[in-house]
Length: 128
Image (cartoon, rainbow, N blue to C red; front, top):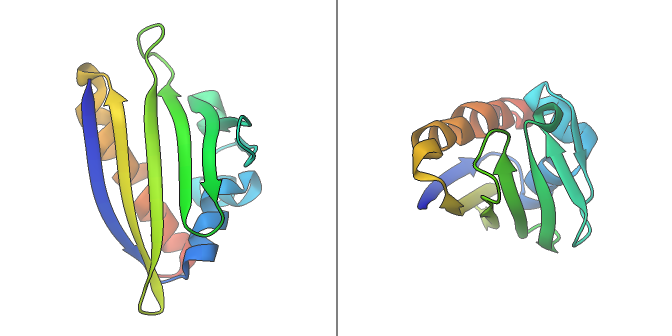
């Protein structure tokens, strides 16, 4: 299993970034794909029309999201932990993302996918 570490900056404040990631309707708007997210611990997470999903493990509004997460097609029983840590950076947000437990065979695809399918469209959606 492998780990992904990424750091990104967004022009919007942490509360706005948090809402875009945890509100299913907003998530669908910035990704362009269906999403259902129950932001309560234990709640289901389904993004990209069910191609990725899992459960909400922990949330601290405006600052932390932790999901037990897996992609469709991963080996049976393979799960990762995806952690989004948000902090104020000037008038915007610094996001530190760590994902532990990614199958080695999926590492390159998942690492690139966060950038292409999440950070780039989220930055565009939030305006900067």
